[in-house]
Length: 258
Ligand SMILES: [Zn+2]
Ligand SMILES: [Zn+2]
Image (cartoon, rainbow, N blue to C red):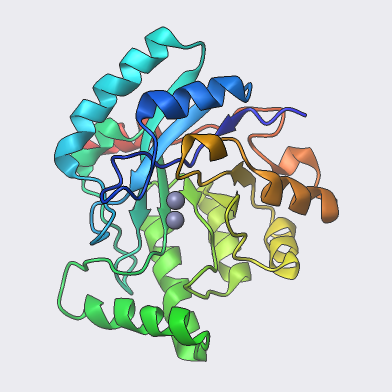
């Protein structure tokens, strides 16, 4: 089978050794796996412990360009942005767009908000991820945050939806379809139950299957997503990187900035 690319990988640029490999090592691993494309998507800037430094983005671009010359593979630069408020803010500014061939977005613990009251959104979800109980109100709040994020930013992919931040998958999927946002089947954790994956599929969303590799040896390791689509008999036409190449909104983002 032909998984065309892996669009969610972390490198040493996610701080504190959170990602283990260099950009070149990740790219080399992707070539060895036979992929046509790989994206370098370190953690968003507001993740307190692991977030990539904005000041490193230009250097990363240079390393990516060098790797593209050296290896027979298309390498994309991106970031896995964080959802940082109940209003659906994410930690991306228009000035970041030049470095974003692909923009992923997910919920992560320990992020900095923009305003004081963002603390409550972040803190409540932190409690939920510890105690695994989500109130109906918090689920609604999270759902609206994701919906607003998709409407306000040109996000390409929602990563590990429903992991650590519970949402109404049907409502999120409806807007993902409208805004042409792919929903990820993540290689480390699916987040969604089989039932929820089917709810998203029935809303007509497109899935993308990624590894979320934090080391070169895991690049292209997408068996959780691949097994899910086989198990649930989801047709390959619903998966954008299965025998086909996805399209991302990089040009749209850059144009909107001008
Ligand atoms: Zn993540
Ligand atoms: Zn990740």
